[in-house]
Length: 309
Image (cartoon, rainbow, N blue to C red; front, side):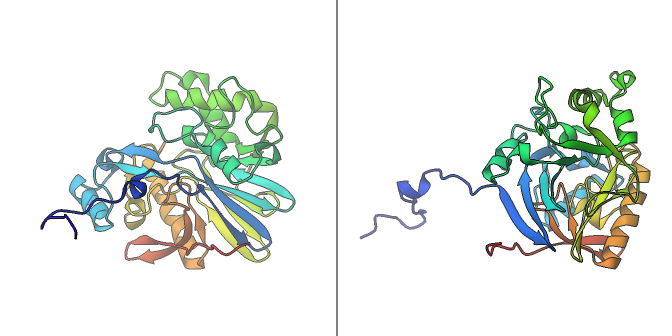
C-alpha cells in the first residue's frame, strides 16, 4: 500500500532523478543536393528585454513575451551555426563567441558541437561571416591567434572588416567588439576574401546587403538543385519581438532606424516569395518560414526531419 498522504506529491525513483546527458546538439537536413548540419555555439543570455529592444513600451514588450510563454526578465538567444556541404565545399556560417563570456557561461560551444556532429574543423573550406560582432567572429582564432579552421578562407564584407578592426575605435562604446574582431580577423588577414552585394562568391551562396545592424552586415541566399534558404545573420534577433514589430529598435544596432527599415524590406521579400529562412538567433534549430501578419511578420518553424539522410 502507498505511504503517500493526501496532498503529497510522489517522488521520482532515485534512478529517474539521476542527471542524464542531453542529446547531441546538432541537426541535419537536405537542401536540394546539399547537406546542412546545424551546430550550436550555445545559448546567449541577453538579459532584460526592455534594455535591449527599444521603441516599444516595457509593458508591451513583456506582454509580447508572455503571450508566447517566454520569460519576461531574461531574453535568451540561440546561436545556430549552419555547416553546408555544397558544390564540393564545406561552408560554415559564423563562428560564435570563442572564449568570451560576456553573454553568459554557456557560449563558446562551437568546437565541441562540431566534434559531436562528426565535423573536423580542418575539413571546413570556407567560413562566412555576416558581420564582425563578437558572437559571430569570436571563434575564428584561438586566444593565441591560431586559426581554428586551419584550411579555410574567411569571407566577410570589406566594410565590416574596416569598421571593426579600426584601432581608433578601441576607446568607443563598442571597444570590446573592436578588440575581439582585431584578435580574430587580423591574424587571418591573408585568408580574408571580401564579397559584394549580389555576388555569388561561393557555389550556390549569394551575398545580400542588409545594412543597419552593422554597416557591412549581409544575409546569404543558399541554393542547391532548385531549393533555397536565406541565412539571416542578425537581420532579426528574436522570433517574436522583432518579427511582430519589425520597426522596434535593437540596442546593439549601429543604426537602429536603418536596421529596422532593412529588416522590414527583406522580411517582406522572404514572406512574399515564400523563401525558407535560417536564423542565427531563433529557437533551435532556427529553420522555418516567414509570413506576413498584420503590420509585422510571424515565424513558422519547420518540422524537424528526423529520418536518416
